[in-house]
Length: 278
Image 1 (cartoon, rainbow, N blue to C red):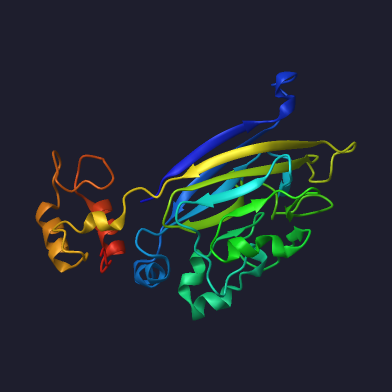
Image 2 (image 1 turned 135 degrees about the vertical axis):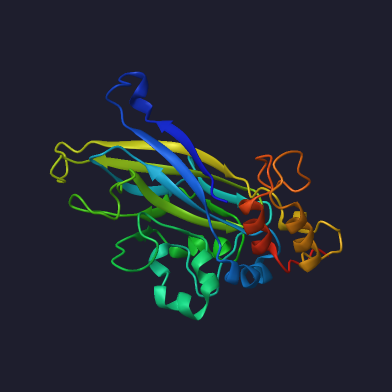
């Protein structure tokens, strides 16, 4: 199942000039976890693991420079059950080595912050202040950046860069987040305006968007697929689902709430297969 959500934030100048003021949207979507990897990932996280990617949507001819937090406007990520952090992973995407995913496929679902890119290839992102600010988060706990002088992830360029400029969908990737629980977060961004040829507009024009907050809801727990309450999602539950497969109304199995028992229910079940619910 994939779902896309959008949260819109207008700059503080919108009150004086709404038509000219840029916008920033946050969008997030669920990442499909490889069914062959799900059980290994779940063994590390517990049942009900979900992976999301969060994007900042910004106007054409603008670039995303920084996602930060300070004592006035903290950057925060909180989960009711903690975050998945792979031993081979990193707090920011510039520490993700693609070849390491071949060694441990669950690394593909590590939690990290970024601006634009999902791994270390050509990644020019760097951390503002001491990288130890991520220690608690890298241990699976919540993330809070609220020091006096500010900290976060930053990119500086001399003009257009595909990493921090919007892609063909008008979005810049800013985080991957994996957890078994409800996640709440607040980010703060600065964007900078470019000329149509990709050079920096002079005089420099930047906009700040503070307290752009969001909630990621994992939805149904995979143990909902334990239809006979045996404590295990197993072949007996699969046979029950198959007996209802194709139902189009009043269905006893309707995981996504669309009124039917169809392919999405089957995909969700297969991802949860062999879950221990005890």
